[in-house]
Image (cartoon, rainbow, N blue to C red; front, side):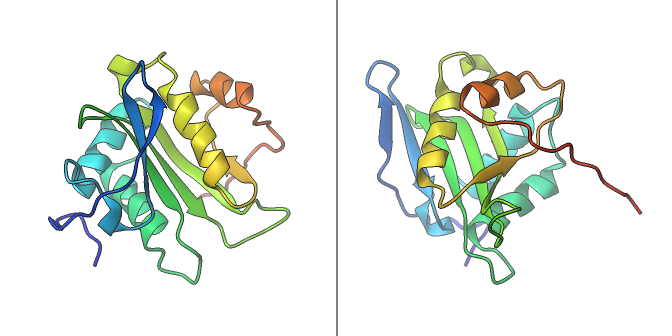
Length: 169
């Protein structure tokens, strides 16, 4: 059904970010939507490597992809966006559905990453904007205060409403 070793991948109808850059965005709503040139494992490795130094462990990244496309609870699936240039992944985003509404936004932008060699070309902004268009309801994300991407999120209209606090057992 899912998974990180499945070779039978479907294809998506990508949108073109700009003809000049030749970057296309693929929307994945299930594991069947992966383009033939990309596997779930390759996506997970891309996210893990491209998010450094803010990366999560690789198993957590894989779990995030699985949770977006095949949530284990009664939540609706989210989606994954893939920015591609010449059959090579240059950006990715994972959006989860929270199953909530109101005080907790309906969507959680779990991860967004751009290949370090293509940063500054507008790829991150393009996939984030596209995710806002696709998301049904409000979107939240967690970002570390010293992450340079925080400025991009603010330019795209995101605001810091709360400070997140956690208790670890």
